[in-house]
Length: 200
Image (tube, rainbow, N blue to C red; front, side, top):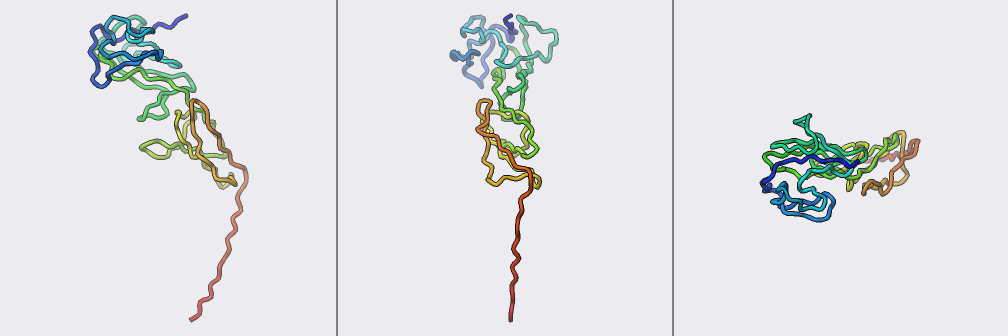
């Protein structure tokens, strides 16, 4: 059964000055923003006339629980949710699987976010996974990590160790280049005491 999309915005929608083009949902091309919600289908998938669900996700109309597919609104807020294992790459909320977008007087202030495949990072008692977050630094990683993320693994010492230096892990399209593991046990460190004989 095909999923219907809400017809959001209204005919004669004014273009948003921050976006000059809209990419068709199925990726077949881009159209000028002046063609968005103008009552004429310019994209082969009609995504310029109806806000369809993102791949691997869905949305809810936040300010109108009675909204149904096919209805039009002057103002609307959508909460976009991604399926488990997918998320929205957003520099302000890097590990998010949902976000809000809004339309006022026929103007969309954001493009429909895309749900992309995240890398699953199962909890590992031997390793602490630290994610590199641009502009912030290192944060403890969540269970799902966005593509392109670099992870610095660290052994949970003193109970776990690695005889080799742990390399950074990288998430690419839902898969890790490798997953770091540490061994149980402790590392024995021997200190040599030096004795200095000071004579005057």
